[in-house]
Image (cartoon, rainbow, N blue to C red; front, side, top):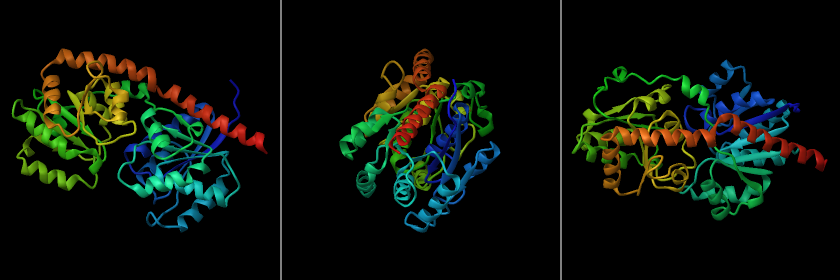
Length: 373
């Protein structure tokens, strides 16, 4: 199939490891397979993912924002956009979306695709500004139906300008990864291993996570492995000590081996208060690691209780405890969940299909802009 090559700026708030920036960087690599030349930028100072992009031969830049209210950053972004001359701008996360919409007023018009990957519940001013400026986006992409409903019902986005493109997973990469060796972190091989991965932020509900593990330990010996960093780490370490479970909890920090640890674990425990479409849950399902998650809309969209995992009511510690105990005690149940979950996530989230959908969205915006000239 002959396609016109497109030059697309992918803009994020930062390029730190984890979460959305990591997904955006992986998307950039795969976009080259569909004749898209990605240029990846961030508003913040240069981050570790800039180096990853450079090692892959992908052009990238940073705008060196001194903080969230550094208006000079907008001028630097506008200069980068003029220098690059993209066919389209694709931004994601609140600050990047807002900056792209404002720069669109300063520069010549290019199609603008903005995107949202989580359901915001805490920062009301984010909601207000997203709603106020949403009309400047030619298309807004959500990564789940739950996020799309949030945008339209709570923020007043025009439904005809909102579409859903799910997170993509590279099953070729996932299948190449070997299970991590528990001995690397002195984790016993004969004790069930529960894993959590992500940014240690209050919205992740790590206090509940620790309480659940403490409850499980009353009945059965387990180990909890925490993969990630963030502002909540110190308070969680304090809670672990206070509850007397430090000997059963391992803080491993950011890890390049999340997939390997998911393959080595008995289950992923994920009690977030809100999510958009949690990538670590998708990765766990793809790796054959059963999931026990909070019953929030985004997780409800991914997990069918009793078929592909278990959902528990947030705030109900013993609901989580019962689910964890049931899974770590029943290998057949774990295998059954894993087999069904892997097939379902492969059918819906394979990166090749997802990248084709992004390319189709880009084509629609670029051709529409050409027809308006």
